Image (cartoon, rainbow, N blue to C red):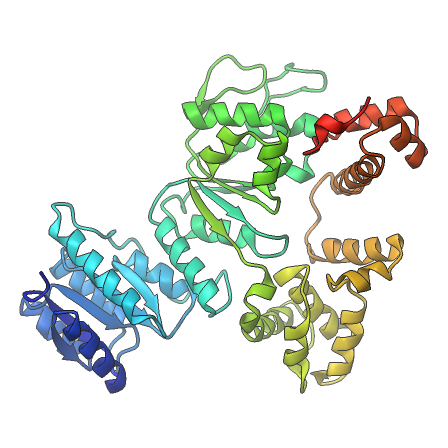
Length: 485
């Protein structure tokens, strides 16, 4: 029953108060409205209300400060935060201060009513919902940019996951910001005082991955002249970010699964198991369903890693965020010593028409090039067109017109430029050669219906060499049963 439930509503916008008041009353709730933080606090302090809905920006006080007082005085009272300041920091701060839920404006009224109903049901249970406040996240630099509905949904998931220690799997195309999400989960999570240790599976030679992850003892193998603390040991008490998990070889997958099952690991050559006191966050740009179907990734490991999935959208899926992203990258580039410039007429509109195969990273690199290469006080449409013409747009016709060398030059230029002033990961040469060789061999096998002899002739290499490379590259085709030896 809702008739005996009272909702306290605080918003300085009379129009919003009216709309919410009517919707809540139609749903059967009593409503007490307030236009200021002081009026809301008077109602709360007087013991009124079963749930609070409050805006963040109030004329006399920040809604988060009121939330702090509510949690101290009446910790069992659920609070739903609403805000037009739609950033990830708003979502994280709401979760940190103990809000039951955060809804970015504009929101769907049906969604709000469902949240209210769920919050009241949870509040009626013996264990009250809500995490206690741990620290003030206000004023920190936002790790992600975008106010679209798509990004708002991601912010809310991240905010919830900072309050837990669950394993997270982040998927999305290259350049969508997977490491930024992983760092946000760590920096605002329960393990933020511990280390954040990223490891890129694709940048480590396959034969060294197990040693890199789990460490080794002196003399464990040829070249092991001293003990090495692996990434699990380095990340103790913190977060281990396994980037490009889809590139992990099968033998390492088996060992990682055992660690996740038993919560302990043993160094190579070691005899004593160590507790794996880390939070695991994994990420990949690959299609894991296809990899599982082809036998190149363990299904049981995937389910262990995919406890909480977060899918990051391609930039073309939230094109409305390009305005905010472009201006953010302009400010960021100026801080890195590049000249101050404005976006000229028509530039934003042209950026929104681009396909963005390299996603947010491609946009950032484009802004940097436009600032660095061209003179003038503004980035012009002409300069923008010139730079976009140099890049593969993702349209089949444009890519088909390129030579292989031109396509690779454009792709590799974006990849290397993505590191900025930082050194690229060790093993970049081997990674690039592998990523070129593997699809080349796969294409040759597909073109010859899996006949290795004909594929070797097509490639101009020895059949035994082809067999060796298939084995070393760990190529497993979905049509493997058709491959003829």
